[in-house]
Image (cartoon, rainbow, N blue to C red; front, side):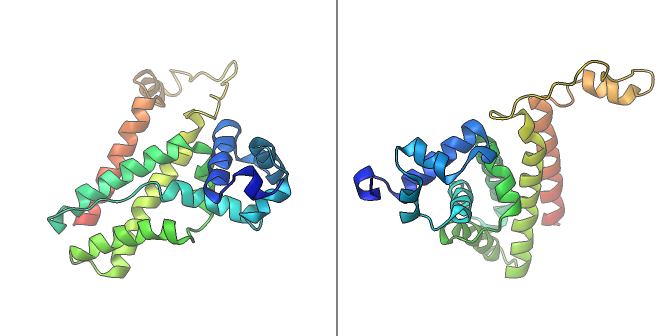
Length: 209
C-alpha cells in the first residue's frame, strides 16, 4: 500500500508515533510497530521519514513546538511571561513522558522547534537583553524544566509507580527529618508542584537581578 493510498501525511505519522510512545514507552517504538499501528508496511513510512532518527527528531519537534511563548508589553514583564512559558512547557512534557528523555538528549534542530526558541529569545531582546544572554536564560529555564520532568516522570501516566518492596520504609529513628518530610507529603503530586515552583521562582528571581 502506498502512502497516498493509505491517506497518510507526516503529521499523521508523528501523531501515531506519539500515541505509541505515550501508551507503551519510547522503547516500544519502531518503524515496523508504527506501520502496524497505521495499517501499512514499515517501508511506506520512509516516504515521510528517511530513518528512525528523523522520527525521533520529529517527536521532539512535535512536543517542543506545541508550546508557543506569548510575550506582551511591557517588555520588562519578561520574567512573568517566561514563567508562564516554563509552566506550559512542563505541562506538555508531562503529557508525553516518554518523549522527555528524547528532548533531554537530542538537540532541537527543526525550524518549527527552533522558532519557539527564537521567539522567546527575541522577546528577551526587546527588554534590552543581549542575544547571547537571552539564549543563556532560555537554556537555563528549559534545562530546569526538562530536568525536573525527568525526575517527576516516573509518577506520570505511562510510567507505573515503582514498588518499594518490603523492608524499605524509612527508619524514623535513623532518618527523622526524611521521615517527617515523607509524612508531610514528600514525593506526592503536590510536592512535585511545590518543588517546581520553588526552583523556577528562585531561578527567575536570580536571572532578573
